[in-house]
Image 1 (tube, one colour):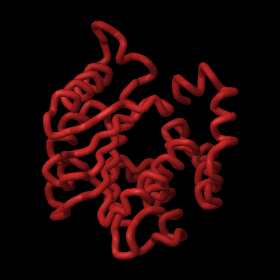
Image 2: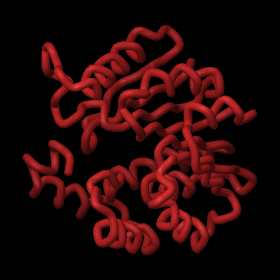
Image 3: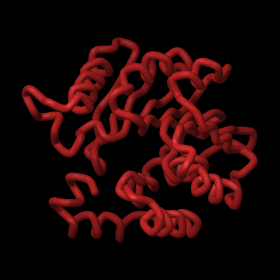
Image 4: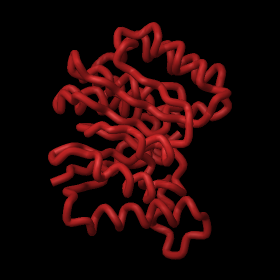
Length: 215
């Protein structure tokens, strides 16, 4: 649950009631995520999923990269905007949970256009000889700055980079954070803001999405 959902549950329900319908496959995936995983709050969810879907449809990407698959909700949302000849690469190192996103990838209409890679993203990404139009980072926060470093050269000019959880339940307002994850998220927000190659803003959607365009 995000900070926003916790503080304003009625507003969250209002926003969902005034958003486009959630596809049935995502509705079933969301339900199974809550039934069969120990941290279901990690799922992107309804509102964020519709945002990813609409943005992807606007961009019409040929190549999408996702760092951190979890159960595949965000990947399937972004796949809705893929070109017919497009491909989505999603990377996660959790082998124990891999069966769940793979199950839904296989039954989706995008099954032939999603490549699910199990492994360490820091090792996998440099091996991908691909220029990306859309990138979504939602993985281990301690490595966010390293992900940006290796992804930036592979993001095309005009491409969009999204970084999740950048408000970190409001902890980014802490003057002297104790947790390393909080320090890294604050650092990443500063790195992005000061990078002359980026245009950016933070969207207060769920736990915060850093919305970045490469010039």
